[in-house]
Length: 265
Image (cartoon, rainbow, N blue to C red; front, side):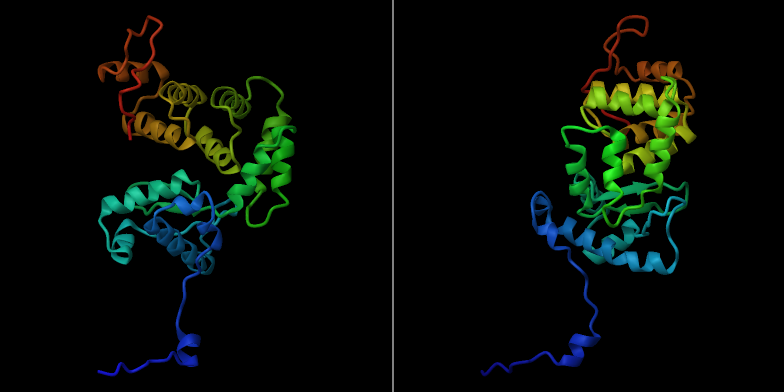
């Protein structure tokens, strides 16, 4: 049987739609992503055009996209758990940030590009203050720096040790051995509007003890304890955790959490 050769006509090339696949996804460290994670990122990258048409950007000028788990399940032909796991994979590579908007509202998805590599290079400089490092970021393409300017101004205009944002930045640098990224700075700034500083500071100490050193973990704990469980003080959270039997010592002693006790999420 002779197989008939089918050639692609020029009109088909012009009329077909194509997804853009960033070349840097095939470079280290992103080449370690699963193929499904790469496809998910490609879908999110393509969805930016819809965001631009609908003016889907926040007050700081950051573009976000909407893509529900159900839509991912349909396009990627996978289960909901696989979608969740794939999102987590992108998050671990700092390529995706998911922000809740409330009950019955879709989550906002913020995607990060290879610019994260350049941001990390800036942060790894041997010299220079946080201000100098973030000012260098302003010269990079593709990131909104309004929030950076605001946060740095907030830190430096108030030299008091009581400045909550400065305190958190210093605590993270000292205990986690790193500086907050611009995206993490923005998240912390929003958290300070939503939760008391004492709560955030306590959760950061928890993250340090449990070796869960991410702002995302801190944010999830604040939501779980402060919002869902209505725990409005550090003492209330400590009492709540004691009832969960995840403290190795009583509250009045030099207690610390059992690292084997799972996080709220």
